[in-house]
Image (cartoon, rainbow, N blue to C red; front, side, top):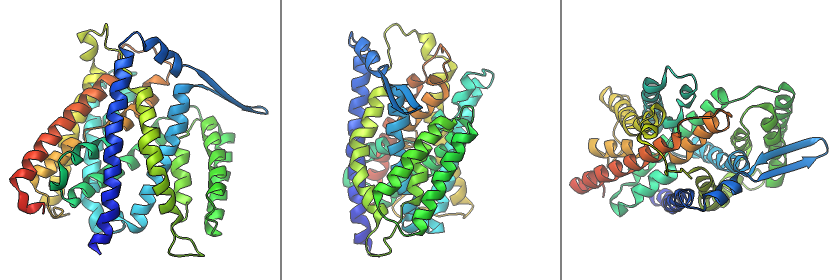
Length: 398
């Protein structure tokens, strides 16, 4: 039974690691281009107006926002599929497997946000970015973890993945509750009607992907026009995809769709998003910009807040008997994983775009500096700590 479970997990983790490497490459490429004479073409590309019109319905946005609102909806759709699978038949289907990563994830969101607010609480504009350091980039984090090779126990990988899933749930809730503009109740009513249709399709045993995708597109457009962030449509649709096929219980439409989307998201959606959002211009940037409270709050939230939050909350849960160590882990490896959770790259950039870049406010800071610095330092610390932990305790990782 154990072998049957480990094989798909191993394949999944290998794919995530490869995706993380590609993310690193595209992020570095964007930074390089943004700091060469090619930056003019980079900016022109992202500012390219793209519009779609059907009758009186018009959606007109620059290419950057099509990437952030459109492509990222596919990413959130995959997150929703993974979340449903884990709850129905995965690690999160048993309460004992939920407690420790769940508590750790809460600490990993609350403490980084508190660190950020410590530096920015008195700035009404900067305070909007409080959720930026609360996120974890699972692709990057697993990519770093896989550099340690076969010494890494499966339980450690599963723990990191579970914490990241809870982080994603928190990020989805944060986006829905705090990063919305003025609400259009008519558009919201159309989205609600679409959700009702999805429920009927699910209850009727419909498994055709195209049917769910068509309804999902309507919900996406409705949310885009409603003021609620459109990427949430991806999560909503995913939760209604049937886990089993009533006509063939051995088939899983959800697992099949998840499998097909992994490559698309890992090797196209996230790299394109990284390329479009990581192009930080460093030329002419003074020390004052680096030391602005926003990038400092983000960086320290990811580096210090994540380590204290994830490790501290998990330690309290273990000490008070609420949970136990997963097999093969110890205090040092738990601390190393806590540091890796400070790699916030993709989700942090996305929340940052919602908090600042789409607000129309002319800012004197660039939160991406803090995201890049915090993610790089967290990844380095996590790698070095885990390298020492796994070398020192080989009998626990067999």
